[in-house]
Image (cartoon, rainbow, N blue to C red; front, top):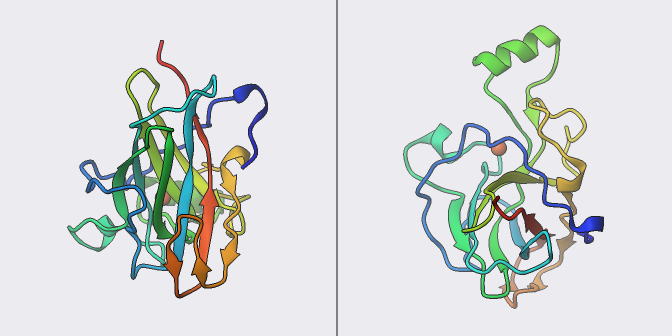
Amino acid sequence: MKDKPGEQPTEATVQGPFFWPGAPKKELGDDIGEGHGEPTLYHGRVTDTAGQPIANCELDVWSGDSEGFYDMQKGDSMSLRAQFRTDRDGNYRFWSIKPTFYPVPGDGPVGGMLAKMGRHLNRPGHMHMMLSAPGHERLVTHIFVKDSPYLDSDAVFGVRNSLIVDFPKHSPGKAPDGREMKQPFYTAKYDFRLVPSA
Ligand SMILES: [Fe+2]
């Protein structure tokens, strides 16, 4: 992702119904997606709007599985969600899966409204992220998979162009974090900018 002109803060988008507080705390570089889908390395840097790195920023991340189902839709144990903290230079990295599109529930109020409007129920593939750091506004956002269907017709109108990210596919071999991969994998790089709190 290129630097944005004027050091604009990262755009927020909907939190959605699948945030689950108290996700397991993990170390940078850990894999929370193993066995759940196509491996993807998420990495980048968190700074403030002046470009200063934010160390120890808490990153809550969550997504659905390779069929678009979230853990809480399947049972009462957490998966594909975790909390990470940026390192002293504001960097983060973790492994999860490349998220797929999924339909919002058709029987709830949103589903009913979309049916009346004649719209489909699907959301494009995305990774939820919530960033919290002392002295900064909390950011609730997603990063969206650039080649996902439904980017131009997200059922809940959550897509922002600045949040659409390339997920290049790589052959087996050494990943940018040094991990030796025996299967193809994806990478997704995104830098976040947080707004200092008033
Ligand atoms: Fe979602």
